[in-house]
Image 1 (cartoon, rainbow, N blue to C red):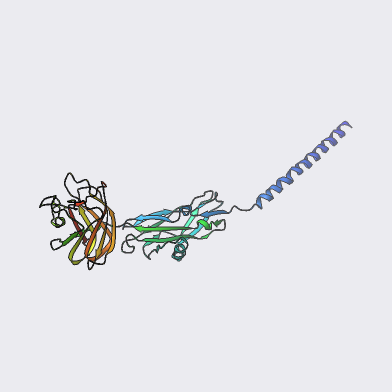
Image 2 (cartoon, rainbow, N blue to C red):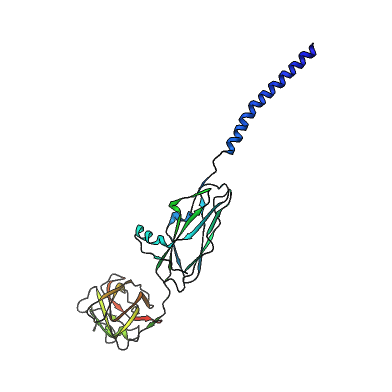
Length: 330
C-alpha cells in the first residue's frame, strides 16, 4: 500500500513539473515570435560634408583629387548601398536661392571614379569616392565653378536626409603669376599736381626724373614757399596706346625720405580728359620696386596716379620712379 501511494505521489509531481514547464515555454515562444516580427532598422543617410556647404576649394591649374563619402545616423543593419551623381541642373537654383553667380562646371573638367557608396553592415560610414578636377584648358583662372554631387538612389534599409543630400563643390583656379614686360618710357611725357623746382637743386625734385631710369633721382611735391597738401597726382602721356597689365613705383632712395606715399589709385584714359579708375592700392616703405598687377589688361594712352595719404602722415610726397607694364604673353 505504501509503495502504491509513493508511485501516485511521484506521478503527481511529474504532472506538476510538465505544467510549469508549459507555462514558461509559452512566453518564450511568444518572444521568439516577437523577434521574428521586429521592424528592420532604417538608417538616415547624408553627406557629412554638406553641413558646410558650399565646399570651397582653391586649386592650381593642375589635376587635383578630393575624397568624399556618406554616413548614417546609426549603425546599419545589413549593407546600405547608394548611387551618387553630379547634377549640373541644380546650379541655377542654387545661385538664385543663395544670391551667388557661380558658373556650372565645364564638361570634361571633372571625373568621379565611380557612382556607388556603401555603408557596411554594423558601420555608420561608407567607403570613399574620388573626385578629380582637370582644370587645364577648361577652367579659367580666378573664376568660380559650382559642381553639385547628389545622392540619387538608396537601398531599402536606408533613407536619404534631404537637408544634406547634396555636396556643393565650388572650385576656383588660383591667379597665375603674369610675366610682365616694361614699356619703353623714352618718349613719355609727365605732368604733376606740383613739383619742387628750387629746394632740391637742379638735379632733383622735378617730375621728369621719374622717367629717367635712375631711382636715385626723384620727384618731390612743392614745399616752397608753401607746402602743397594731399592729394598729389602724376599724369603720364605714353604717346601711344598700350595694353597695361600692371603699374609700378620705386620709392625715393634718400635716407631722409620718411613721407613715402601709402594710399593711391590709378586711372587710365584714351584722351587725357575722360578717366576710368582701374586700381586702388596700398604701398609700403620698401626701397625695392613695387608692382601693382591688374586683374586683366586695360588699353590706354594715358595713365594717372593719385596719392591720398603718406606712410608718416606728413604733407610731403616724393617718388623715385614710375612706370607701367604689359603682359608678355599678349
